[in-house]
Length: 338
Ligand code: ACO
Image 1 (cartoon, rainbow, N blue to C red):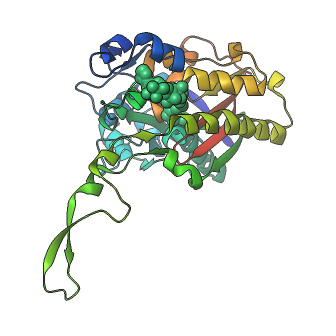
Image 2 (cartoon, rainbow, N blue to C red):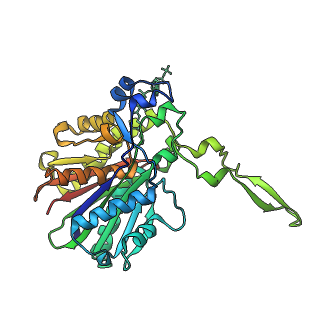
């Protein structure tokens, strides 16, 4: 048995920053950003944190599902940009919403994260370990973006999306997941503490000295997102269609059988490039990147929430979701609305 999505919720900060606003801090223009990426604006945290956005999205998903927080057996948060390292963000959400019976953990697979969270809880449900799962993609990317780098800061936004997945005889699940660490350098961000001094004992263990984490060559500027945009573009447009095709072959279906492809909202040109290679119309590829920018692992659940709330996902609809990003990592997962 697998799980079905019985409720969704999302949260984005009220604070909207337009492309024109960004021209005040970096040399760019509204037209350059929109033409190259499809982004018109993004929502950025003011008083929020990644953990509070995750909590708000979770509360909305729980309410939408019509369940009690006590019914949740596991909470999985996908994030690369939480304000919290300890405790994990999932435990923070647990405490905030009163999901006292859940076990909780965070995962980091960047923009593939929500897919990984979904696939993980499907495996738990299938093994009989859990019945009801809360999965969340939450990102405060504005805290790790270099606001002086026009090549990256124009792309990203903050937000969170959540879903409740509950065991159901009717649920269908299939997935293909991949990683290629050899391409890891295309998109990096070192931990903020990587460049802090730390203490070591000298060889004689008599003295204590300060050292800086230089072994991997990190500098403080490396604690912001660094991206080889063209490498990421090539990876996404080439590998994501292959991954989706592999999933369809595994299921013995074609793109004609699929009603909608819910893709990670990296940027509009990437979504268009993937659609072109799959030979599918953009009518089957919903996007909201113009409003929110790229919110990494929050993209897919925010989009799913919007689609459900707008009545665009009906019983029987066949969906392929695909996340892809840093690592590099990617996944394509089949979802049937039931
Ligand atoms: N405004 C104006 N000019 C800019 C900007 C900007 N914001 N950013 C770069 N430029 C300039 C560059 O300096 C360069 O100028 P030059 O020719 O004088 O040197 C010129 O524009 C072209 O720069 P490129 O980097 O070659 O621009 P490109 O056409 O590759 O577009 C972009 C950059 C939009 C980042 C593109 O590479 C892309 O879409 N990559 C995918 C990255 C992505 O979506 N990442 C999301 C995170 S990863 C994920 O979610 C999977």
